[in-house]
Length: 328
Image 1: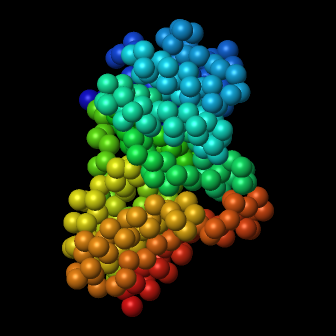
Image 2: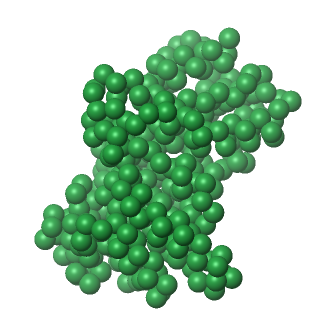
């Protein structure tokens, strides 16, 4: 199998091209996704309309509700649409379509109708795009029955997980986080789909488990050298899929280490870390050596001012401090 170095945006483009070449039912739609409009605001769909035609790659008006509505209709007609909502905050404009229709049609039809749509959407703090463009909202969608939520951190995972989303019979939210988009890695030119709901052990360890995903996983990785220097053996788990999350892998890791820290870029209050922490506490209460701890953003919109935005994001230094506190 031939591998090529690419960043995560290029991996998304490669996944879409592979999926479209393998299955003519795969469609792409969204604002400016066709080549005559630039191939997407980030270039993630560049070249696809030229290669596969305007009937399969459709630029749409600036109407998120119409984009998702059209994707749902196409899915019900037997297609596998990949809809691009430029920024995750803009999914709020299409929440009725996502929450009341895409997520529920399987249940309301007694399983007779499935909605195999993939919604790609970009977000992430650190770029001074501020409160209406940078929120990590995976907790909203993870709370919704009928939707899968995927948050990759490496180029290979971007490609393999997107391929799985496109093949999945249910709606998938595919989160492209700005902090992870431009870091290169080896990616198979013809990749195998990575199963949804399966975590990846980034580093094995024996003292404490850190659970994270998306761009925040990379900040946790940056904390590892300092923790190793302090003599702390960390097991780092990349959740990859926020819903359904890999309970088996997380619980097995924490059962081994006895300590757990959950770290995400989303706001800490009522965030997905609460669900993971409470599950660990319920299942492993008698085996824990310390209380489960969570790190996340403060309950605030993402600030524009750089000094405030930097303070908003959970830094590698804060991860290291939290781990040391749990080890004390």
